[in-house]
Image (tube, rainbow, N blue to C red):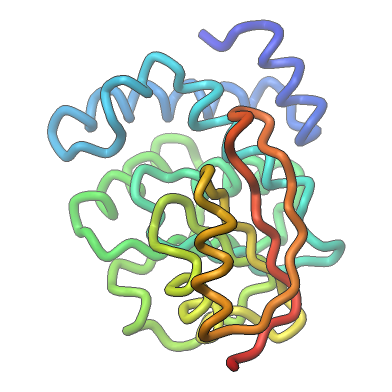
Length: 210
C-alpha cells in the first residue's frame, strides 16, 4: 500500500488520480514476484519501491517539453522510468507515444506482463538499441544503462534534433560529463533529484559530435 504522504506527492507532481496509483501498486506486486527469477532490481531496493523506483521515475515527468509526442526509454529493464512514464501518460497525456527498448527477452516479457495487467499500451521493442531504426524521440530517457558518452551516442541515433535527453545520474555525473565531452559538445541543465541528495537528473539539450 502506498504511504499517504507519498501518494499526495505523486499526485501533485504528475496530476494523476488514484487509478494510476493503483497501477503502481499492481506493478509492485509483479516486481516482487518476478525479481527472484530474473533479478530485475536489487532485493534491497524492493523495500523502498515507492521512493527508489516510482518517485525516482515520476520526477522526470514534469521535465518533458510542451507538446512532446514521443518518449523513448532505452534499456527499460524493470520499467524505470519507462513503465512509470507510460502509466502517467495513460491518464494525463494519452496521445504520448511511449516506447520501451529492452534487449533482454526475459525482462521484455516482464515489461509486457506489467503492461497487460495494468491496462497500458507502451510500444515494446525487444532488441539492442543499436539495431533499432531511428526512433526520433522528443524525450529520450535511460536509467543505469551506460556512461554518458555512450548514452549520447545512442541519443545521436534516436533523438529528434530538437528533443531532449533525461538521464538520472549519480555522484560521478561530472566525471561522466568530462569524459563525454571528448566525443560530444552538448548543453546541459542539472536538476536535483528528489530521492537522493547525491543524484542528478541530467537534461541534455542541443548536442553535436566533436
